[in-house]
Every structure is written in C-alpha cells, then in structure tokens.
Image (cartoon, rainbow, N blue to C red; front, side):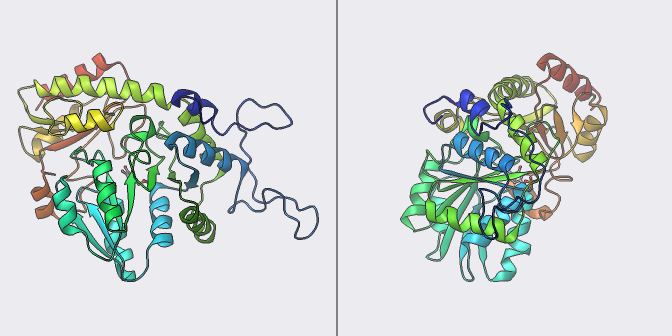
Length: 383
Ligand SMILES: *Cc1c(COP(=O)(O)O)cnc(C)c1O
C-alpha cells in the first residue's frame, strides 16, 4: 500500500478482509468484544479503546499523510484537546499563528491557559516573526496553512527547522489543504491535525477529527490520552469519513479548479476590492504555495467595496451558495467572518489583522462553476 499513489491509497488504505468478503469496511456498530477467557483479550476489547471501523480509518489517515500512526477523534477540537493534554505541562509555552481557527484559540486562551500554559500569537509569515516570539519554554509551534480566513501561506519547512532548533515540536493543522494538496510531515512537521468534518469527510454530514504522526513515543502518549480522555468517534462517523476519503482527490481537484475560476472572476469585478486566494499570481505567497502545495484548494476570501450592510445584501441574495459556517463540503458556502466564524475575536484585533466588516469567505463547492459565477454575479448586482 505504501508504494501506491495517493488516489489508490485514498480508496484502498484501511481495507481489511473479513469472512464475508465485504468489499468495503463494514460499520462495526458495537461497544464491547468477547474475551475467550477472563483477561485473554482479542484484538478489540472495548469500543473506546478500539473498534475495527475506527482502526480502518486510522490506517487510512496515516497512509494519506504518509505518517506511521493515525488517530481518529470525535471532532477536530477533540483531536486538538487530546494532543494538548498529552504533550503540554504546567509552565510550557505554545507559539501559534494569529489567524488560527477560532475554536483552537478559544480552547488555548480560555481553557489551557488556566492550567498554567502560556500562548503567543504571531502575525506575519517570515522566519523573523517566529524567531522573535519563540522562547526557551516553547514546547509546540502550532500553525495552520493556508490560514483562516486570510489564506496566508506559511513555509512549513522553514517553521519546522526553527521549531527543531529550539527543541519544540511543529504541529500543522492541515484541514484547509487536506493531505491531497499538502503533506506537512514530509516537509518537516512532527504532527498533523485535522478536522475531518471538512474536506476529508467532504459532505457536511459529520463532525470528526484526526491526528497523524510518525514518532513512536509521541504516538504512545497520544494513544494513551485518546483512550484515557475518551473523545473518540463512533463507528458510523468513522465509516462516513472513510467513505468521504475515497473521493478526496477528485473532489479537491474540482474544488481547486472552481475556486480559481471564482477568484479570477471576483478579481475583475468592480464591486470587489481585493481577492485572497493562493492560486492567484497576485497573491503574495503564490510561489511558496506552488512549491509547498499540489493545488490551491477551495477556500477564497474577498473584500467587498462596502460595509457590513453591503455584505448582508450580498448574503441575502445568493441562491446556490448557502450562508453557513464550516467548509470543505461538496456544496458551496459563503460566510461573513467578522460576524460569524471570527465574531469571538475582539473587534480591534480583528480590524488589525484584516478581518474587517468587508471581508467575506467562500467555501467553493463542486457544483458547475458557471452556475456559481452566475449566482455571485446576480447577488453582487443587488449590492
Ligand atoms: C473546523 C476546524 C477545526 C475544528 O474542527 P471541529 O471538527 O469543528 O471540531 C480546527 N481547525 C480548522 C482549520 C478548522 O477549520
């Protein structure tokens, strides 16, 4: 399986033979497993500790990220929580990027902070800004790339080197790119985190998370915490993620193609101030994105010429795009970060980092792109 290319692994990694000859992995909807004699355990004992459907998903996740070990969780935040609980101790410091997923930042500042762990957030993507903020007690450098919602691209290899020079681990939240478009472990990251709710699941019908890594002793720690803390996904949700993964490559190609067309369309629109999409040659990190990614993904942000009222009018008139948080599904979504996904970030900070009231974010789906252009076009006319 390791020798095979990505699209083949997406369909077959995690396959297991059973006595029925089932072609796909069944849903083992079961909480406990028979023991041959008291204390003589089989491969599976209890559903929190392990389940065959979950094991298949964990194998597939590891294979897609080209890591040794995969772990599945009940949400992206459960993956992050379990990782933080397993790796951080009182007195440790975490260095993260500024436009981090809002829920991750809320968990760090409002919960982990109470356990004596401190956090610093850097704006900017150069090695200098990371170098200046890293401390002797920094245990983890935590980045997302492309970032949310500003779609900046961070050089994973550069940050990995910097983290390792300071004896810190690099964690990359690879949710926005998906393993099809970006492989952080190959670029030097120690740990990859995912919200499988997004592109890996791909159909807006489940909430899940994942961790992939290659270091055996770190894996033992996280596996222990996965079972001890217990934020595990149910068998049916694992099966849904496995099913989503099979079409990840074809979906991501279509998401990326549609997003580029919409980004180009919006760039030329008189009512649009600026478009943020790493696939545009005008994007400040375009050449890095070309080098680091195998495509530019389905997320596009743009500044409307106008205020919150203008954005509201646009959102009111879209017909194919759905106004909703989240991303990564086959259907197109549109949202207003400053009043929706990023409302919990204080206003002055939002404005400082560029999440203004004129900013809108698209999760471009895999519908016919001409219909998506027509939809945005008619909605922009009403603005
Ligand atoms: C959604 C998301 C998360 C959190 O995942 P949940 O599945 O909602 O818990 C973490 N990081 C990123 C980048 C996300 O988009």
